[in-house]
Length: 569
Figure 1 (tube, helix red, strand yellow):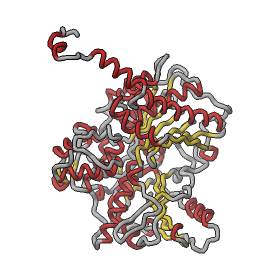
Figure 2 (cartoon, helix red, strand yellow):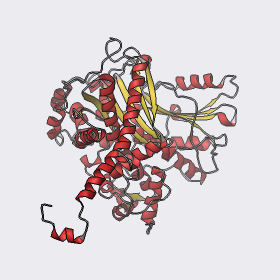
Figure 3 (cartoon, helix red, strand yellow):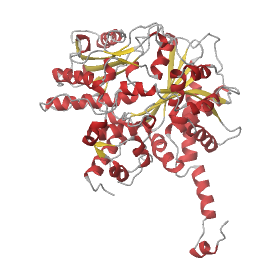
Figure 4 (tube, helix red, strand yellow):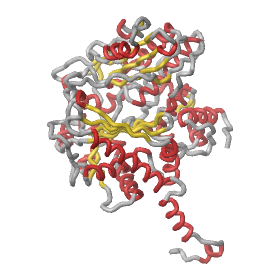
């Protein structure tokens, strides 16, 4: 059914942009079209920019365009209830994940970043881009945070805001001329490497470099932020805002004013009041203590988890058809989320590769559990919100892929508050936090970053007078962590959908594992994913037809059968 109102048209267009679906019917279900919790935040963010406000609760209660159009309200109607991000000032409590970061006692805490390297056309207006970047710093309060040393604070650091107003010289877009360099890639690598380290007490935590390589195909924009102030969702917001500010400046306007969403400061303060509200979760988290065979066998007996200087990774790639089935068929047929399928495949692969019977894993979630704070709206708030929760996943002793997926689904859906409750109790509640600090830490981490295709653009695109195109550059970014920093896990498993295909990365330490071992593990994860997709989700898959045959065998054949059947039949 085609959109019938302006609200339905806006939402259908936003859904299509984020999900990469050309036509959206107003009764289509967001999650069976490939959406997930991360992409739902992106939809809410973009809808707000188009004038429609939808809360997360409304989004999950109304999973169709028609349903969301009925409950959406104009942005202007909520302005007076919001807490604009640009008004934050003074000291602010560290959030749970920021406390986790400083508890790690990294040797080089200023080099723990996230970054993007884009190809930008030579026609980009550098002055306009600089003004748009400055607008980002003024719009989002987290980008004005600094982290001075404080021996009395947890982890030895506190958080506070710099004064609002014109950013200092360090915060401006920096232009770099490499047009005279004979060797382009080494010169670019040096510039990017020099930009990785942040002084947490003084430097703005986001910096941008506009790099001129002397040719049309060698113009780059590097955006580098310390992880303390951004996460995967934040980057989607920042890139949208950068493009929007550039467009408004081209039209003779201003970069933009702060959106009426909850400030990062207000969220951080609200979390400090929540330990009592999530105290009932303590028994659940105590039940996640490791048991069975959960430790990862090593190829080399080295202490600790190794440093990032000894880190390496192996990549796996799922086919385009299988990725489509993972994103759309499984949610529609088996009511499974992507992260549930990925963790099931990982648990099966860990059993196959290492013989472990329990997957004890730190699962990273987006942490934007707005239902915990009345009136909170984080749809366009930038910051590091991640929730890190240890889970002990148990597989059936003898299981086909469908049974394994059902078991993992059941365990993941029992997790309270998306794991944020654990972060709150562990880092903001001194008494309960000590109890949760007693079990050994997981040796494996898992993070599903969602779909990035909505931000994808190609090198062939060109900036027009009013639009900024950002295409992924072919050159690699430097390592995001300092080589001297200690790794937090033996194995780091991340996944994201890029270019229509699921990309899996397994990070490891050469001091502990041979590449051949991680090759086997990565290959096993991809193979188990394929089995799960074929067995549980794809029409024609074994489990689908088995369930269908059972349903048909039990179904009444005629209305007479229905009317004559006994209640127990």
